[in-house]
Length: 143
Image (tube, rainbow, N blue to C red; front, top):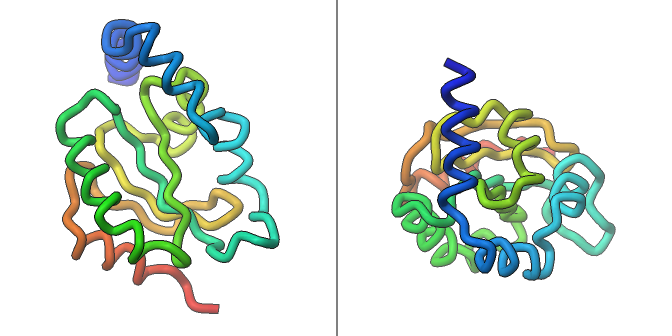
């Protein structure tokens, strides 16, 4: 089963993303894996208010993932100051480690993690509406 999933991911990466899309993904600021992994595993900078990350595992070319992204963009003002939204894409080869680390097997998947990268709660795969995302955010531990 794991071999089939890995094969599907590799084939999806090879066929789903043209060199122009890869260049566009890697040229966008903040899209390097080292920054993304550091943001999930290292303490946030003092200027960053939120100590929690809403990690969004997605295939940028998939319809359901695009729908979920639109919902998150609509909620961006509401989520600001509560969580940092972190995108983990199938089209970024270095992001594979995060897919493996968290055991992501279906997309789109939303996961709430603390600043060290420890998983707090995960939503079942699939498109989640704003109410579901608010419920996930409410599971942030109060300190």
